[in-house]
Amino acid sequence: MKIALAADHGGWVLKEEIRQYLQENDYLFEDYGTFNNEAVDYPDLALVVAEAVRRGQFDRGILFCGTGIGISIAANKVPGIRAALCNDSFSARAAREHNDANILVLGGRVLGSGLAREIVKTWLEAEFAGGRHARRLDKIRAIEEKYCRSSENRVQI
Ligand code: RB5
Image (cartoon, rainbow, N blue to C red; front, side, top):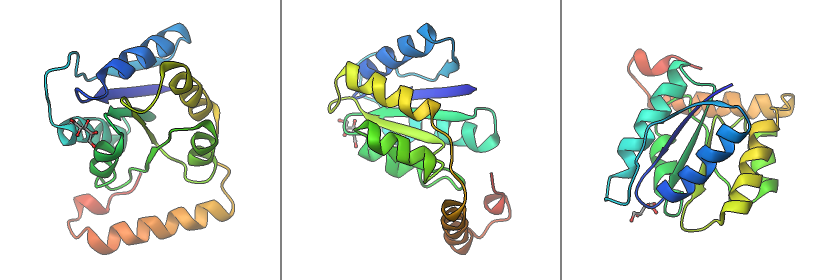
């Protein structure tokens, strides 16, 4: 599994922690920054990871900002992206099993490193359950198609 990471200045410290977790557990990943607390705009980082996941360059993405909220909103504007902000393990499991979330979002100013590691572990190891949940994802895709008019945007992943 290949994973893309990115954070703004509010999330970069937690990103470093999760980067270490991925290294310790032999995951393949690419870190798109940021690498210090100089202010950057979270939509820019969301777009890099969301587009790379949409293209199939990575299987999953993990994004971080201060709360996780702004970067989730931005990532979810990219068709085919299902970014889930999870501050607990129960939600992280459901985000995979029910929502087939291809991006996990964490709040760098919300979570401690221990809980964040547990959330990441749960999310990376859980699988999409399919069945009735697949029908609901089809309905999400239908909403995207309704509002995305260019032929490029209609491509699904
Ligand atoms: C940046 O100060 C902060 O607004 C950002 O990290 C995030 O929390 C936005 O939702």
